[in-house]
Length: 268
Length: 247
Image (cartoon, rainbow over all chains, first blue to last red; front, side):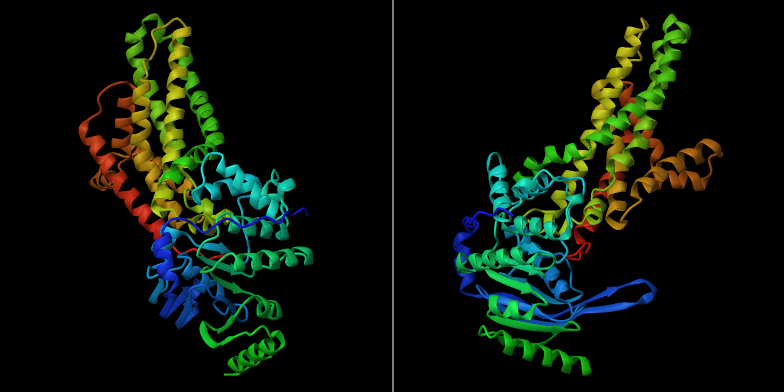
């Protein structure tokens, strides 16, 4: 449970000039983006349907909606993990895969899955290497994030033996190795106990404070929490944006609005 | 590119246990030949070393071809099975480059198996007092590459489209043409299949390299050409396949 309060690492130095330029401009654009998953027996699931979205650089945005609404697919598209069937997606003016290739994207998936036979330290070391660390900086960066999520004592454990909550904390640790300009958090609180939910909120606030220009997208079913952490809410249902409004920090009002929109969408 | 170079030793370590098992199996299956060599070939029977080298190279080449699918398994599918793909592939790294590094680690391991097996066989023959089979150590790397470039690439392609079972599929791709060509008379169908699945040219090039001979040029070109084409397709397919964030 030990967790030190340490500062987060600085923004990536690569492309600093162009980054400042991008911050002044629209950052994420999706135009007419559709994605359909084809399952067995010709079953089709429309995950995203003609989605249009603009997200400004430096904003903190919540993406909410019922299960299967398309939130994870949206994050997958932005992370270059999912190819839309149709439409145009631009992140910093680049296609998502090209953007990831040049700058990387911070992704915290809803279910963090890790190689069972590797230790927590080894998994984080590999990710740190791909983040550009080398030599002595690798163990240093790993120790730093292990301390941030209170997992230093468990660093020698194999990932296969970790509980869901501990895996989620490893997920947060890898996310903090080198925070990127675009951060995607898909159900970040899932599986965390109350102490670590509070700790996550602190880390999230710190990320926001330290990150003039970082864009954070957060998906969560916990509407009250979301209202406190974000400044804009995008409501998605059946792959479509059904509402989009500023939160103004009022969690009750936001909760009422989201539920009423989703009920209306469900009845339609 | 630099981060992949730093990561490479860890990718090699992932394949280490399989490499040790593969080496042990190659030595286990060649030991009857070694014993025959000591008692038969070593006393000058049938030009001793020459025949011993050919037989041993044949067997080692075949065993390496069968071990290759197992060593090549999981270049893409492991990431899907253990779920680490999304975390790895959202880093600033080239996807084809990342898969290529994993593929290359497999080649280094197969070459290692081939060198250790060849060196051990040579030493065992020398210790027995006979003239050694003369398996070439440099040729072992070449044999490993010839085998890997075709078998390893095929298994990479299978790994990109299958979530599991690509090692078995790759083994069957090697074993079935061998079994068919050994048991059936050559037909147009078989020779056509041989062009598509160039197992025999691959094996003939590998055993020539192992025995320290210059392999037939066409067998190298056929194997290498097919292997590189399959590798390119495999990397393309792997790089374009969707990952769900929860995969």
